[in-house]
Amino acid sequence: MKISMTSVHVDDPLKAFEFYTETLDFKEQMYMPEAKVAIVVSPEEPEGTALLLEPSDNPVAQHYKQGLYEEGLPAIVLEVDDIWQEYDRLTKAGVEFKKEPTQTDWGYEAIFDDTCGNYIQMTQV
Image (cartoon, rainbow, N blue to C red; front, side):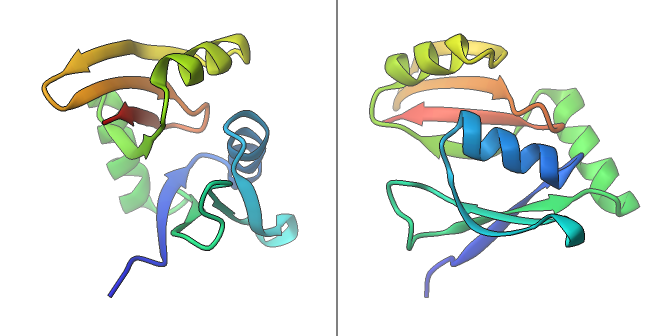
């Protein structure tokens, strides 16, 4: 058994699609702007787990997403090979980091804002 798709609730799937593809370099798996459906995949694993950029227009989803954001908790975790290189690239692209790369017991982590209502944790193990 494996995870084929998961989702992250976003304020606006079309804006999120732009951020995830143009800034984070994810690749389009499905994009139907008229239906506000956007699914992206990692360029490193295009056949791997897909990420549905799900509208958060459901009141339960809005409350959950807002609660995570207010507490500063990441909605998803992305693993990178070189956290300093990605941090530099994303900072130059205008990404706002809540937490710069920091060494932990298990590697490095950083947290940034995805511009769509979520914090994303970036890790290097």
